[in-house]
Amino acid sequence: MGPVVASPESLSDDASIELRVNGETRQASTVAHMIFLVPELIEEITTYLTLEPGDVIATGTPEGVGPLSDGDHVAIEIEGVGTLEHSVTQNQS
Image (tube, rainbow, N blue to C red; front, top):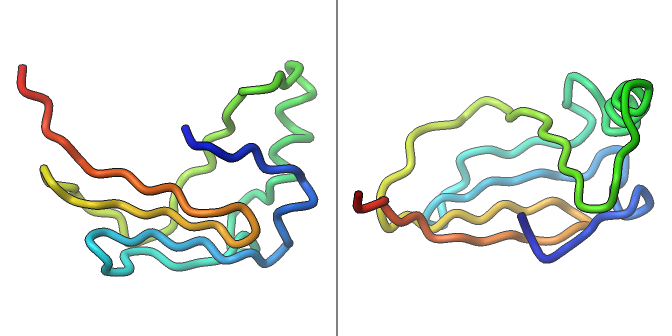
């Protein structure tokens, strides 16, 4: 998913999360506004299974989502973790 593996220490309790599309901020929030905090998610998940290196936990999204178009440039930034950037390409099937 990205070039960074985040440790628990790298993510503060109020780390900012921002999504930009073509340089325009579409979403801006903090980890503190998540319905379930990351430690709570990990605790619940690990009661049922063992998390292994490379496992991904999908947490949902804050308000502000919308469709993307071919050629859009998306940047997702999490304070203390880094920025992941991608360009959207329409599948030609």
